[in-house]
Every structure is written in C-alpha cells, then in structure tokens.
Length: 494
Image 1: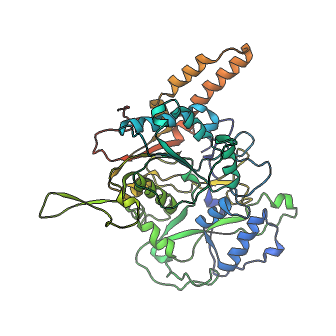
Image 2 (image 1 turned 45 degrees about the horizontal axis):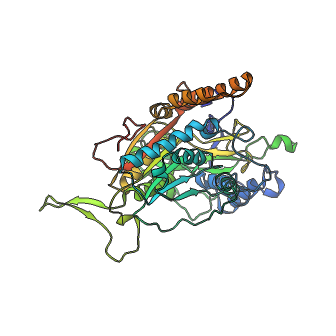
C-alpha cells in the first residue's frame, strides 16, 4: 500500500506478483546468458545459477539480492551509496523523528524497572540497526536513568553489512575502539533487551500456492527443473512452491529500455519439493488454507528462528510437565556439566520489542515488494540495487516464541500509532516544541513544524499511514496474566 507521504518508506505497495507469475513448462529452453543483457552483474550470476540448477526459491533470490558479497543491496561497498534517508531509497521511523528512538529507549527502561531494576548483567541488543540512528536515540534516553545505565554490561549491534557497521561505529563510538564478534554461546544469567525495528521484513520468505488434486505430481527434487516430473494421481490438494525463473528475453533493442524490464519472474513449480512438503505443514493456520483453490501463503523460516532465539534468551528452554501421580510441576533442564546454553536459564529476564509492518493476524500473501529512490519498483528488476522486503507474519513469530520457551509470553501486535500514543509521544512532542527558542523566527517555525509533522506522521492511522501499517509486538517473561507491558495496555511498575 502506498503511503500518503512525501517520501516513501519500505512498505510501499508492491507490483502484483501475479502479473509476472508463470507455470513452469516441461519444454523450457534456457537461453545462453551470454546473448542477453542483464541489468546488473548479480542478475547475470543468478541467471547462470538457475541455468545450471533450475529455478530457485524466492528465499534464495531475496538472500542473494540483499546480502550477496558480490553485489548484494546491503553488503556491496559502493562509494557514496546510502540506502536510508532523503538521498537514499527509503526513510525509516528513527530518521523521521528522534522521538521514536527515545520512546523505544523509555520502553526498555520501563521493562527494566518492572523486572526489579537489575544492577548488572543488562545487555542491549539491536538486530538490523541500519546506520545506528535508533540505537543512538535509545542510549541518549537511557543515559538519563543513571542506575540503569550503570547496569548495562554490553551493547550489541547485529549487522551483516560492512559499510553499515562502519557507519554505526562512527555515529556511536567516534574515535573510541569497538570490537567485532561472531554470534556464539552466551551466558544465561544475563538480562537481554532486544530491539528489532524493520528487521523481519527483510528476511527471506518462501511462497506457496495450493493446487487441486488433478494437477498434482510426485516430487522429484534431484531431477533438473527443465525435465518433466513424473505424473502421479493425488486425491488431495497439494502445496507448490512459487519459484524464481528468468523472464522471457526482451525484444527491446536499447539497453536502457531493457534495464526497465524485470530480469526474473515468479513461476509455479511443476511438482512438490521438500520446501512445499514441509514448511506449509508447520502450523494449523497454513494447513487450513490447503484445500482453498489457488490460496497463496508466505512463510519466513528465518523469522521463526529469530523469534525462537529471542524467546530462549529471555526465558530459557525449560518445559513444564505435570505427571499423573503428583501435582508438582517439574522443570526439565540440562544435566550438570553440560555446556552453557539458553536451556539452563533459571530466572527469566529481559524483553524483546519487534516493530515492523504486516497484518495484525492474517497470513501475508503477495506482499513481496521492491523500492528504489523512494518509489515502488518490481522486486525482480536490477537485483542488488533495489531494496526487497515482505510483510511480517506476527502471529507466526508469536507461535515460534511461545513454542520455544514456556517461560515467555507475547503481547500484541498492536498498531504503531497505539503503541507510540501509549508511550506518550504527544506529550514528548509538546515538551520539545516548548524548548525550541533562541533562533530567528523563521528557523524556529521550521523546527517546530518538523517536530509536529514528525510525530504526527509516525502515528497517522489513516489508510496507508505509518501508525496503522506498522505494528509493535513484545516478548517478555511469563507473568501468568498479572501484567501487560507499557505500550500494550499496561503501566510502568517498580
């Protein structure tokens, strides 16, 4: 959905994937990539790979487009290139207003207070931190609460892009040293506060479509895609994966015009494959749509894994069971001598806050989108130069978190407008506006206008507004219904 904003954000309405979806034919002939002009070097690499191994999953395509070391959107080192802000491809909430990061920092403080004001072992973790703007605003707020600031043991920014890591270092550390580390084992006595803002929407998705029994064919994953699968009679509907294939070569003669034509398209796989046999069966929500003709669903396994990891870091992996001979609840933990892992955490602590866009409860479908220079474009055009994203399935994330740890609970999702309103964004804006002064009247008016326009844009709940499109969801230690986190209908306690 296209936002009614002067600058596009990442949830611009995508071109309908149906317009570029084809059914794979058994007599496809892969043309030599040497005789065709590809829009980017990465596009040619992808085409060569498909020519060799056959169609690839949408997840594989997204992963290469965003993080390939050879031309990925976030990982390539292009001088002067910046994905964020007015001069980039999209603008995010922290760039719109400092109040966004301040209120996220306040949310962390509120959770820290509610959980007993731990004096040590606190970790602040942000996944997908971009240029570090959100973390900078959060830390400025947290520093105002000296007792919490002194409890912070470490701050982690989980980032795959070398250029963005350098931008984070310059903003947050200046000339001070910063260390890089690989993700590995962690202590379970820590209290992690995890922030994921516009992170899950960039994780690779798989797309599937339900087909009636008459179209069913047996899986044949080891046979090249251009060979016809063996026919097999099926009495039940099946899921088929929507895979990426090269689009037909353009008949346009000029290279400039060819570059505007998508290099790739979505195609319906001719047969079931391991992905379509397993992934749509992991949730009753997906299974319920299997019998609906042409139903399409999007699944993000990596998103599920991250939600599980968040839950494990907060609550641990102990499971509770009640035997038939006793009413005692037994917590299953690792044996003594086992290496440290999240399963041995004895006291749940910390929290995770997820801020992203997607439906409140529906399964995302046909949500793949591309954006470049603040305008929606086909996600299959100029791979590596276009930001690609998809709607977040918040219910799936909640299911994954609750399944991973019985010691956490999930609140939300709620609309961003509701969350920021409950956190006091209007009151914060009024305070900042009153402080504006000491400059000429014109500059003062512009400053006040930016403050007013910024917060109102973040909470706009009209059709396509950020306050409605974006959602917030929290993972916190289980309380048995004793409280709700602030921003989700609860109050600050402690």
